[in-house]
Length: 248
Image 1 (tube, helix red, strand yellow):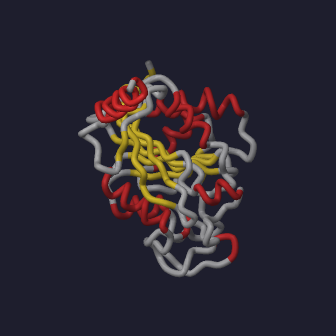
Image 2 (image 1 turned 45 degrees about the vertical axis):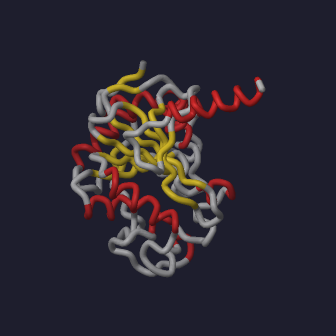
Image 3 (image 1 turned 120 degrees about the vertical axis):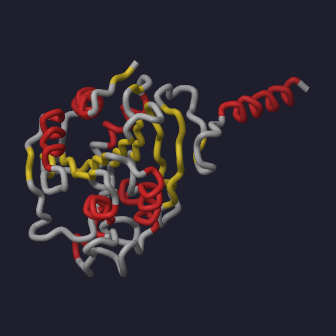
């Protein structure tokens, strides 16, 4: 009897923790992560792994999306987003973090998804049929991960997006608001650079978003082996400082 009561109480607690202000795909935050106000499963990868966005900060404030591990072998910046998720509550910003956008690639330690597609060449803006290291897929938005991110960004419509990568060590100024890119570079203590993808970029997330929406998306690249303390301690603070946000 006591056991049944315990199960029922736990069930009621879970119902009470649910957030009616979030979409039906969202879930309440775990109690141990005080910064999290909700989560959303954006979709699933080719191999069925969930792509999860964590909602932090304060609704009503400027919307920001941070994403990392679009390329599965560029995993160090995940630590920045995980530290933001796992720390104290955040104030002054309406923040979504997607620490692992390409979960199959991250699990395998490979750049591409499980179909062998570079997700940052698969978006439906200036898409071309690319092969090799930059395999762009059989058609624009052919990949479930791409479609999941497109749905999410179309719904949230953030004012700013930072997409974290490695290993080029800089912030891309080749965006529609270079002044903002230079501000990000200063706050993150990274050089401002122009990333040209070797010649002309095709099918990237930032290009698609910048063309389709009013907000600004840009690429942030850390080095090949950034120090753990930078990723876990300094960089999360630096990211919040871009928008004057704070913890606690």
